[in-house]
Image (cartoon, rainbow, N blue to C red; front, side, top):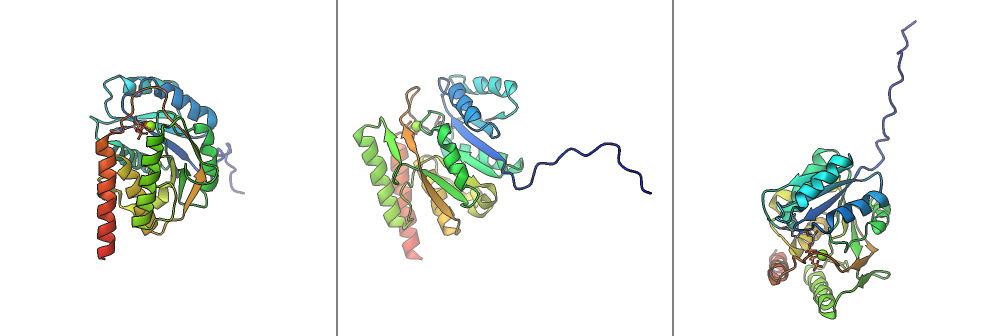
Length: 252
Ligand SMILES: Nc1nc2c(ncn2[C@@H]2O[C@H](COP(=O)(O)OP(=O)(O)OP(=O)(O)O)[C@@H](O)[C@H]2O)c(=O)[nH]1
Ligand SMILES: [Mg+2]
């Protein structure tokens, strides 16, 4: 008779269970970081949070460190200086993929993306490789945006959708859930876009790589605290890059 092991091995988590990482890029979000991290932790207690801070002069990074020290589900990635949202997300994705997270979520620190609606994205993230939180589908909405911000966003999405033939409504939105395994197909090393262009870039890559893309309605809430990093340069980068991608596509 063979000897029986004395201790029962600990139950292993089922390989089907998703491991969710919510990536929150921050630059001077001192007034928001604790609030937003707390909301994510309450809304999705199993998910982990990664704050990606670009050496914010206002001390956001140190505040995030304190949150991480108090909560094993909170992590911080410090980057040496402000290099734009796109670079921050690429680093965060690599961090998450290296640690075995299976769903990687993009979420702004300023409260525009409500953690309480994350469940809607995660429900679809098993079947779809990329889930977009969408302001411009039925049931989607924007709160407290002046008419000109709505106009820029709607027009930008419509333009990019048309010239790039994307077939989704909200092209620039930044509330998204990616299956980590699908990110391998997007050649992250060649992404050089920074602001809204980063979101369009990732979507174009996803569509061209044949990923399954789903849109779910969200209510986007304008930031109440802290300063916006939106700039004419960010809008111009998006317009120019989208136009260039469209020209390059039609040449092929
Ligand atoms: N790490 C990092 N985060 C950034 C950078 N630029 C913006 N962010 C963060 O990215 C998120 C989105 O930036 P926002 O300033 O809210 O830009 P926006 O949502 O386009 O503009 P508003 O709607 O006017 O707020 C926020 O959490 C910012 O703190 C950056 O260069 N590095
Ligand atoms: Mg914002």
